[in-house]
Amino acid sequence: MTKPIPSIEKYMTASPHAIGVTQSLSLAHTLMKQHDIRHLPVLDGGTLVGLLSVRDLHLIGSLNNVNPTKVSVKVAMSTEVYSVSPTTPLDEVVNAMADHKYGCAVVMQQGKVVGIFTTIDVCRAFAALLSKRLA
Image (cartoon, rainbow, N blue to C red):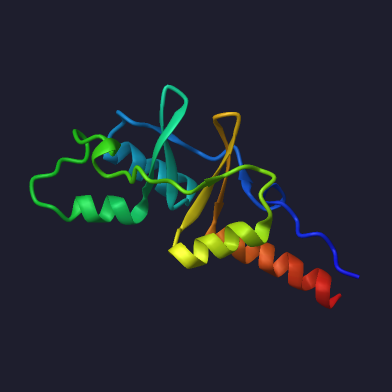
């Protein structure tokens, strides 16, 4: 008997931290460090407009003459964001993340960010599924 594949909602991190598009890179760095996270959805008036990763911050930070207190996250963010609905099957999201080397999926519902699913969440989901399977 095969069990249905769970949706991403079961394993996502709900209500993720986000940052406004006009906020500074230094604020983004502080938020990421303070909350021990590697990805921040970037919002403009509540609408998802991009994604900022620690890698993006390091890349911009390595450039000469960049003042992180004066440069906005808009300069460093990626505008192409992989997003899914909470009901998207887990295997579909994990396969897309692996195929395209995405570090995360932003979970959207009715145009609002409701969660994020990162590679850490993938590991947690895998561990949970293994423990159920092998128990």
